Image (cartoon, rainbow, N blue to C red; front, side):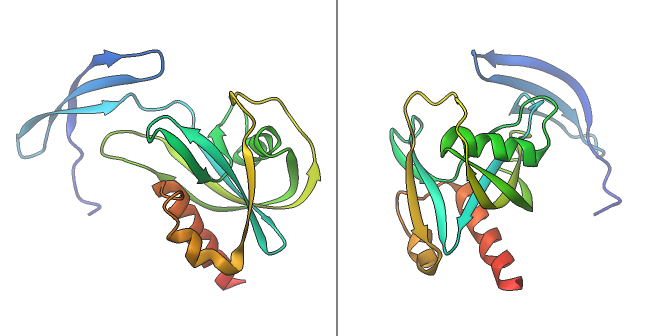
Length: 182
C-alpha cells in the first residue's frame, strides 16, 4: 500500500455553506488518468475529544439531546478542542462543563475519524480517573443528565438502543480492550 500514488487535486470549490458546515467539491486526477469529482466537508481545523470517566466500577455518562436523531442519546462527555489546548486539557475542560468534575489522571486510548471518505475530523478518546469537583460554563442549552453505568453491565450498554453513536461504541470497545490489558 505504501507505493500508491495519491490523486492530484485539480481544484477545490465551495459547493454549499451554512453557519456551521462547508461542503467542498474536489476535482481529482488519479495516477491512472481517471478524473472524479468528490464532495466532502471542509477539513476541520480543530480536533475533538471524547472522555470516558471511570469512577470505581462505574462509567459516568451523559444523556443529551441530538437534533440529528431528534431524541435524547446516551453518550460520553465530548466536544471540540479549543485553540492551543492539548487533548488532555480539552478533555478536562469538557468534563467540567458537562458533568461538573475535573480529573487528575487521563489515558489516551485512541484517535479516530468518523467518516474519512467525507471529512477530516479527528477525535481523541481518553479515559479519565481520580476526580475532583469543578464546574465550568459550557455551551449546552440545558443541563446534561449524568448517568452512572456499571462496567459489569457493559454488554447491556453495547446493546442499548439509546447508545447508538458509532464513536461512543468505538470508545467503549477501546476501553474494554484497555481494561483487559490491565
